Length: 249
Image 1 (cartoon, one colour):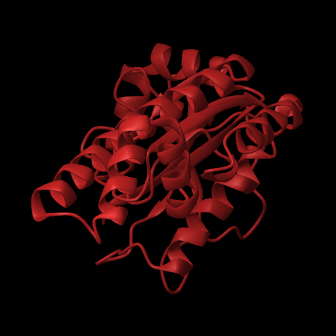
Image 2 (cartoon, rainbow, N blue to C red):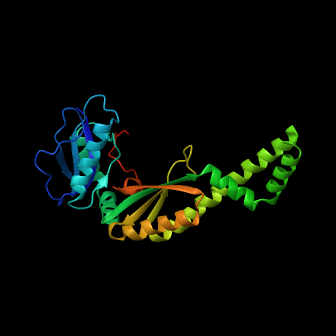
């Protein structure tokens, strides 16, 4: 049976609570695999594991429980290894890397910040900032809507202005929040978000970071900003491969 990996800690990490359960139905008992001065928090992997709410919450709960006792490098949901022996082999082989990451991430959490435009508000801003768009809009209005070519030209100008505003706002958000974080990781682009960025923040300085987020909101009323956190620092387990060999997500 495959081994499911939740995270990696120092082998001096406090013992797990008795009877801790992990993913699966019924819950698979959580155990420790030690090697190279490290401890991997693992369980048996259930067959056909999928990211269902129950198992996602179980994964998060194991990390929250173990993280309360000290630094833990969190693995992504679905991280698998062939067996406990394979996990121990990778711990021994990559001991220095994981110990360095544990030291770097001690006392830190992750906040993910996503932002997109309020369509009506950003359109008003684009109109206010662009005299050409205002002029063509007014000319089309006086002409009863304007010709097809005029409407097409207006549409092209608006799209270009919105793209430019998206890029500027993404940079502004990063420049405001990066100084109050220890590290920043830009996430993959996704439809509907002009920014998707994770920040590594000292747990004790979280209020400073969240105040900076409010500064972004107040300074950019045409932005809708969402914050998710505090989270285990998934985005900062690297540099270097973050999961035992043979794992999958």
